[in-house]
Image: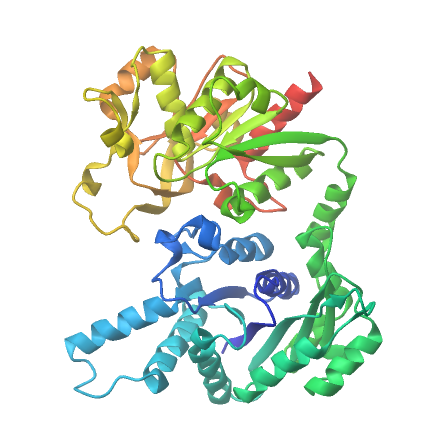
Length: 537
């Protein structure tokens, strides 16, 4: 039977519950336990797929095609496990399922209520995560902040779950803010006391309190929190800001977090294997020199919109012994006229995915600048489509070539070198209807993609509706574009590149989702190495 750990947050949002949960997961896995993780979101959207990245950061895609919360990315990077659609659910999806059942008459005319029906549905999703993963330990993060009205069903479900599972099988970790008040020259524990009081009023006593702060948490502060919140002093953990999120597992390990958690669950403290993680941190600290990488997108006012891309670039930089500085460039402001001024100092240019016409011409300008000035280039999803449009216009003579996604704004007769997949033509619902999840790609021998991957068949995660239009494939190839990756039936273009260029590669998939700190993705690694060579030149 799996053990369960619930992670809640108090005082304010965006505290780093996900990093805390992922760090604990990393430590427990390093001790030889099979760990899986889960994020429960209290909002009423069915999933984040139709939400703007400005609202909730990037949409993370799992192997099985679930559009999930960005914390799933943290989980996968820290515990180095592929998660599934069972690893993320929202209150909206719970209500959608219950209402559908009620409409079918499954409840035999009974009244459908938050308790027991909503809470039971939540518990079922928790059980399912354990059963389908076969994990020894399931770590479930409850989104939001204690006191939020929409989070109450999740806290109640977790309370019931602990009661049903019995002693020693369920733990609660409460992550809370301990703010520093400059006028008083000290950190204050009162917000934490009130947050724990609120949690206890809902029937949940935390086993651990993790104190987030931008200042030192002294033993005296920990003792005070322990006294007022009815936990042992050793179970109040300091989690001050670190230079890197990847330092957090070591900080918590040094405080014995994992040992204490295992003891409370009645599990043996197996020998820990932290050598790979420590080697990564050592390599990070040993980096010298900088690489400047431009990420030309449309959601640049919120860095979390490109979180996995940023982390993939950083990991590839560490592997190359370089600090990567990511420069978010607004594609709406980028043109051919100012491209030299904006991008001239960059060692590499990356154009990420996205939806909608806004900033697309800027992405085309970025691809054009990289192609014409021999700047290493990596295109992802819409970035591939921008690169193809740029090449079609400039090299193949297809004036104004664009995507069918933006056809309404283009003159009649404009070449649509990117077109809707046939199976997408009659789709009306926007949520969960794209080409989603892992698909195979046949890598063409002798290409840069083949050199990067070193494998004939690779699987990458997708999230898109549009593809390279096969009606223009011959024209593009005749113009010199190399199709370096294809679907196994060769119907779909998966990757393209330019042969006479230091590095110009684009993927229709999202390779950033499979990058790990200790194992950078091959395409990102090759891209950063090319940028490093340019820097050296």
